[in-house]
Amino acid sequence: MIDTNQSLKPDRPNIITSEIKAIGFYRKMDTQAVVTQMLSGQYVLIEEFYSNGLQVLSELKRILQLKYKEKSFQGQRNYRSAFREASHRILLQVKDNKLQVKKCPDIGWLKGLYPDISDFFISFPDVQGLNSSWQWYQRGIEIPYLNLSIHPYYGSYFPTRFDHLILFGKWLKTYKGNRKKAIDIGVGSGVLSFQLIKNGFQKVFASDTNKNAIIGVSQESVRMGFGEKIDLSFGDLFSGCDFLADLIVFNPPWLVAKHSLEEGIDKAIYYEKELFPRFFEQAKKHLAPQGKLVLLFSNLAQVIGADDVHPIRKELENNNRFKKELRQQCSVKASSKKTKRSNSRKNEKVELWILKHKEM
Ligand SMILES: C[S@@+](CC[C@H](N)C(=O)[O-])C[C@H]1O[C@@H](n2cnc3c(N)ncnc32)[C@H](O)[C@@H]1O
Image (cartoon, rainbow, N blue to C red; front, side, top):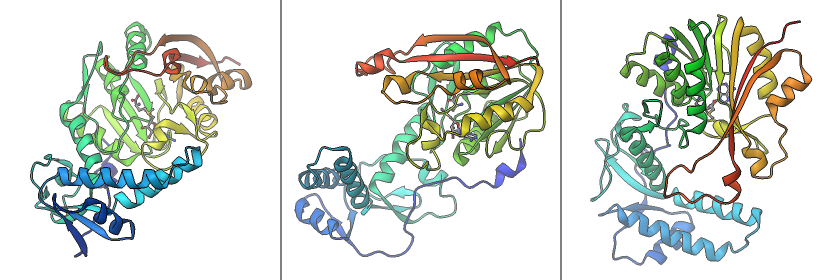
């Protein structure tokens, strides 16, 4: 384990630590009047019950939907931005790292992410985000077939569909090469690294540009007893990795970014055009002569009608670095039986690509 990760501080929602002037909101108050004041810039502090916050939030939604009727892309964007701005003025008070309203969820992140401070104010939407993340973290996510349960840290990417992971897991069982060293680029919740170790790899170097992913996997790997086997690096691609690997795995973002990327989950979903050329250039230098490069990808871009060029095909067609050994595809199942997918996502397929060095 790389020691520098010990000093990483997680990204966490902003909080207010000073006294604030706010309208206290109680259930019997005139919600519309309070929201109107909030829209003019005032803070609202939720009192009594957690559900009072939901009441204010839903009134805010109603009022803003009347104002932003435009259904165009820009119109809806304006609505979301106004909603985001105003809803963050709905506050909850935290004392001793606990919410100060009745019937509220018990959220461990209020302590876990704020070990340095116990009393503060935090926005209601941020509390909702923390609560949902805490549920996933505590319950864990069972990955079928792989005999693996992951506990994703706040603010890190985690899978909710598993077909691509199972495709990789099945291939890994058939893998005949060395199992000394592997590299996992974009470790996320650690799911690929943990699979590699469970399948006999002795050392995994794993990187991510998301701090929270590194902190989470660092804690989780200790909990699983894999602490000595995973070296974590908070940084870009292969930075900090000084060995040649038998296997390099990368489950990259699957969509080209048409916007400027934010830190965090955004970079798990979208990629800048230069990501893949940079990845292949560096992978060439880090793959052992007989090593395999494993990429997980999907036709999601095509399915949603984006004009993205397939970055793996592009690499194989335009450069002399790698050649294809195998490409497998499988359809994506809905994430749960209750989830109804739109027709277009029914055509979604995930892909497993195995590449090796091209002999010159
Ligand atoms: C689709 S997620 C995959 C996470 C995990 N490996 C999995 O299979 O569930 C992609 C991950 O790559 C990370 N990432 C994106 N760009 C990166 C870069 N340039 N260097 C390292 N990690 C990156 C993201 O933060 C995210 O955690």
